[in-house]
Image (cartoon, rainbow, N blue to C red):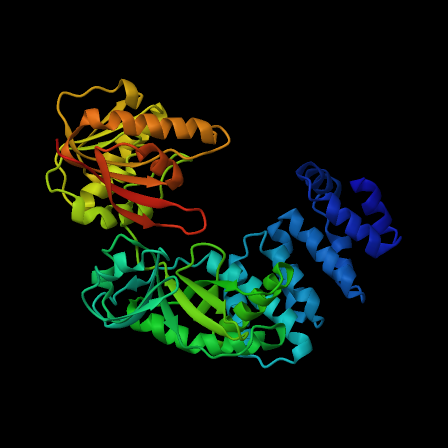
Length: 497
């Protein structure tokens, strides 16, 4: 069909419809090769169409020329772009040039971007100007090697929020030795905190920084105002905490009651306004961004602004590069170990009978230095991954690929710490009930008198059932981890004698 569409175009037959059809046909690589062979380097007809009085004909012609990926077309497209008066067409020239090596005109594109950043536009023009600026920014940054900014605010007294487990915020709060703490629903707000101290804690999920950036309602009408209000405080904050020149790349996240389909439009409008208000010092990026700007809608419709700094490396769980579907999250394993800390013994002999990829044992060792540690699991892939994770963590753990009930050992353990198996489609309730019962029944053969069991489970009722009537055990503590699904941690003592 490529030849037919082009012949109709050359004959002037229904130009707009046939250009659109040809453009769509050229999405296929084979069709592009066929069209290039058909043209034989003669782009005169396409160049003629760039002068057509119909802007949609110019728009679709530019799209077709871009698919040719011929640098011979670059000066033609660039000159036409410079002289184009219809705003909604300008972006299509840029998209076409972006598929070529456009470095010969990069300086001019950079200058045009600077002009757009400073341009005052009418409301009806703003959408098209922002789209043009966005594509220009992508083109300019593609050929610029940017040095990342370096976080330097380690010892500055700051206000920040640690997002923690909702049910066990105190486990993190009691580890904080400086600053003024306020309990929030999902974590801690700390004033006068030092990042150097807090980044060592292992029981928080995220570290966020509040930014005072206005209180407008989140709506399409307020998008430009919100973006303008964000730019200055965000830029001042990140510049105070970093070294390095150049723009900061950011990603915008919106948590609101706005319908999903409208949210994308809002995000784009706010991001464009941030870029323009910052004069290009803050640049929206879908990948490799340094800042995550989160807008959290309050009940009254106004918003709260939080920053997550990707320049602040989180290396707490860098060892855990490998996992399986059932693996416990490292921060949850760290929380389990922290809750159990008063019951853990330095130099203890420790067993994890359902060790998975080793996370629970590694976090146990981080909380209180253990002695000899053993991990047992029937899943061979998990054992191999556990070995690699453990090597990266610098721990000394022996792993055995075996069913717990056939595992034998020459001496007794001081502790069992484990993430108990869950009820799943492949492991139904009755199977897991029996597993818990059998595990509690045989655990004693591995344990010293007065040993401790630390059990993380999504099925607390099954743990209670398994312990029922077992007089050799007593529950010292039970901590709720997730109220919705009932996940809990049991700390159980084995009685002496």
